[in-house]
Amino acid sequence: MTQPGRLYGCPVEFALDTLGGKWKTVILARIKEAPMRYSDLRRAIPSLSDKMLTQRLADLVEIGFVALETGGDGKERYALTPRGRDLADPLQALYDWGKAHGDAIGVRFRTETEISG
Image (cartoon, rainbow, N blue to C red; front, side, top):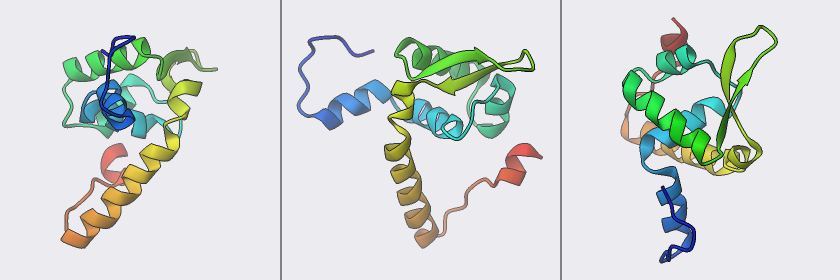
């Protein structure tokens, strides 16, 4: 967790320290389109363990990027806060870059049907 008053070499260093590795960024990318239930996130990110998902969601709530909200159906969902929504454009840029460069070298990406099916 970042400390107020800490000295960083540049804003990118601070941004990466705040996001803290790939899983927080992946979770944020998944819920940037719409709030998701915990079980939906588990299906969407199968390589992430329950323990790590729980920890990273708690971290994202603590730093103010995500909030747990109750939908009209009474079920809890994780949603981006206004601070988290500020990351929508940078997350989309990372997605676009990863897609373009991944396609160029022939990597494969999990499809939506693989996630929901």
